[in-house]
Image (cartoon, rainbow, N blue to C red; front, side, top):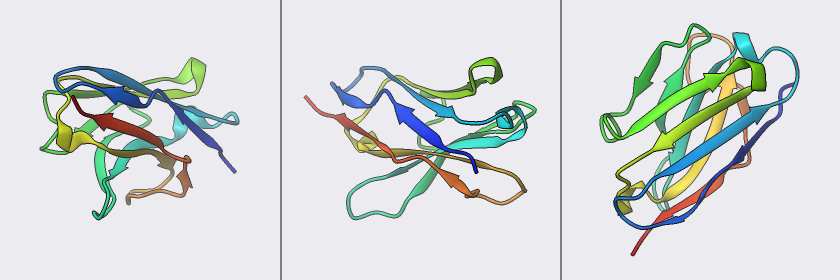
Length: 118
């Protein structure tokens, strides 16, 4: 079992930046594929960005050019650097990780709130 713990959410003005972190327990992090999902009020949870164990990345069209996913296997941590934030980025952001080809994978974090507002 892998436990995921997110941090770094908060309130930011439009155009601002935040960096989310997700730390995994255990010793298998380096072989997990990881992702960030988000869920806004009244909407379905959506895949924002993913990174494989081989560091291949993907992004939702809505965040391309603004968000960057990365990982530090030595720290068992995946990051989501968010820039040029918009009010529509407001959501609870969840870390997700695991094995296999399909998303979402088995392990979820508890979520961290990101609010973009002036």
